[in-house]
Picture 1 (cartoon, rainbow, N blue to C red):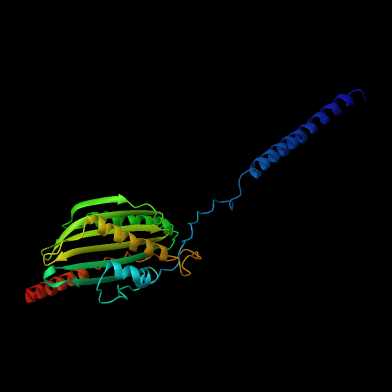
Picture 2 (picture 1 turned 180 degrees about the vertical axis):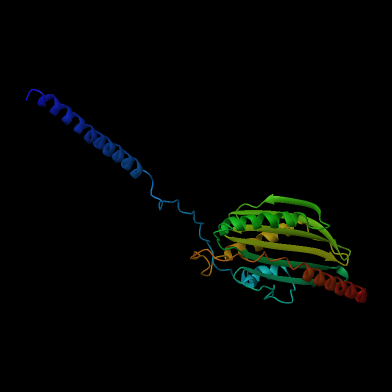
Amino acid sequence: MHRSAPRLSRILACAAVPVMLVVAGCSSDSGDAKESGSSASPSAKKAEPTVEPAKFDALPDACTSIGRKTIEDLVPKTKNKGGTPGKSSDTSVRGGCSWNGLDDNGVKGSQYRWLDVGFTRFDSDQSLGSGAKRATDEYTKQVAKTQATEGAKKVSAKPAAGLGEQATSVTYGLTKSSEDFEYATLVARTGNVVVSVTYNGAGFAGAKSPSSADILKDARKAAEEAVAAVGADDGATTSPSAKTSASPSAEPTAKASDKATAKATGKSSAKAVSKS
């Protein structure tokens, strides 16, 4: 009986060892589980940033974007008061219109004027950026392109405050058909739309050419009306979603302008000779 007590103690001590190990093991597993549970869920990912919706989803009719009275003032004796629309495969993203006229005064000389307006709209695109950003890039390109006009003389570019969200006026001289022309181009951005207005004039058969300041003043008047026309007729609705890329900006109708200038020059010269 005296020997059995120490033996029993040894048995109980040995039996306790596995229990303690099990408890320690469970304790360790529990800590791992807690640590594992604190990690972020695989499904919790950062959402991709969305582009800002385009402000305008339509363009105005370019040929009615400038008032008839303004056309009569800026382009006297214009043959087509309704304007000549530019070619566009999609008028919702690109449009343009032009007018030209020759005020013939025979031996006293003649005055020629040309006015052109163009609109380019950009949709928001997830991969390309917001319509406003894309329009800003196009605005910058058009200003640079105008400044780099081949043969241009005395080029001057200045900010044009009060036209859309940003605008620049570019004035320069250009000799065509032996006549000296004064040019003014105003490029403006309003939302996701770029508006470009070009106005030029020259005196034929001895008539004095208009001043650069007068040409710029008249071009500004037309540009104000063109910018105001954007969104005036249900064009200010927000585009519901990002769409496909807008087509490139409308190119100025330079070829048509040159043809009209050459025709006007020939006509004016012929009449001046016949009346002299």
